[in-house]
Image (spheres, rainbow, N blue to C red):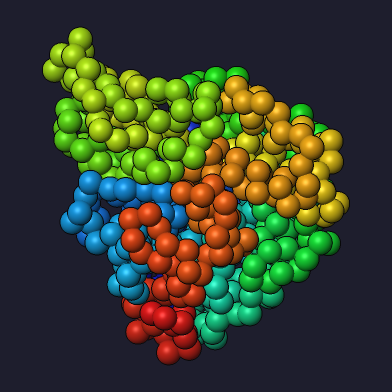
Length: 498
C-alpha cells in the first residue's frame, strides 16, 4: 500500500475501546474526521487502532512472517521453506525492493503513524477526563515514535509526516527527511510520552512508562552508534534512561524460561511490550506454525512450516552448561508425535522454543499467546553496554546487570575485564539471550560488528561472511524501500545498491 494511501485511509482502522478487551473491533464505516472525535470513547478508539498494526502480514508469504526479516539478515538462521522468496532473498543477501517483507515493514508502521497523527491532532480538543486524555496522548506519542524508530533503522531516510493527510495536503507525496530530524522527532515524542500520566505497568498490554523509558534508552543507544555516531554523551543518556527502568522496580527477570511463553505472565515482569493476540476476538497468533519443524507431525496444527531454525554453528557458541541450551528452554530438538505421544521425534536441528504455545500445539491449534517486542533482559544488557562506553570501563552496576542474565543461565559471573573485553562479552550475551527476537540485526547495524561463529570474536559488518556462504555488503546496512513506494512518489530516492 502506498504511503499516501495509508495516510489518507487511516481512520478506517479505528477499533473500539471496549471496557472488557481493548482488542475488540467495531464497524468504522460511518466515521469521518469531521464527526468522529467528540468523546472519550472515541479518543480511546483511535489510540487502540494504532496497536492493531503491530500484527504484520505479508502478500505472497508462505511459512514465514515479516518479523523474521531481520533475523535472516543475521546469518544465524536456516529455513525449510525454500519457496519463500521473502526469506531466501534476505538470507542469501540478494534482497530487492519487491520483497513483501520490506513492504510490510513500511506499510504497517506508516498506517500506525497515520492513526497516531489523528490521535495527537484531535484528542486535545475532546472534552474528557484530563488524566485519561494524557494517557491516550502518551500512548499515541510513544507508538508514533516506536514506528518511526523501526522505519529509520531499517530504511534510513524516510518521510516524516506528523499531521493527518488529505488529498490537498502537501504531505501527500512527502520527501525523505534527514536522519537527524527523524531521530529528533522520535526523542520529542518519547519525551512527550514520559510527561504523560502513563502507569509504570499495565497488564492489559497497553503502553507503559517502562516501555517509554526503555525505548528511549534504545533510541539514545542507537544514536550513540552508527550511523549518527553521536558519541559518549548519548551512551551516558542511554545508560541513565535504562537505569530509571531498573531502579523503578517495575520490571524483573522471570525465574523460569517457561514464563517467556506463558499466557499467565503476559504483559508483566520481564515482558515490557508485546503484540496482543486473542483467538476468536481479533486474530490468533500465527507464529506458532512458522516456528514448528517442517512437516514432522508433532503438533495439533495441520501445517508445520519449518520457517526458521537455529544454525548449529550458532548453537555451538553457547558456553557449556548454559541453561538456555537445555532442551525446551530456548530451543528444542525433539518432541512427541501428534498421533502417539509416547513416541519421540528427533528434528535434526535446533528449533525455537521461546515462543512455543503448549496448549495450542497439543490441543487447540488456536493460539492467543502474545509475541514479545521488548524484554527486561534487553534493558539490563543495554545498560551494561552503555555504561561501559560512557564510563570508560565496566562499573559494579554494569557487571551486576549482565551477571543477572548469566546467573539465570547458570553461568559464572563476569569479572576483571577491560572495557574492550566487557564490550564484546555483553555483545555476545545479547546474541545468546535475544537471538531470534528481532533484535540482533539492529545491534549489528548500530555497532557495525558481527559475531564470527567460528572464532567467537567480532568481525566488521561489511565483508563478514556467513557460515553458509553470503557476504555482507555496504547495501545490507539498510533494507530497500518498496518498489510500489518508489513508483508512486517521485520524491523518494531508493537506498544505494537496490
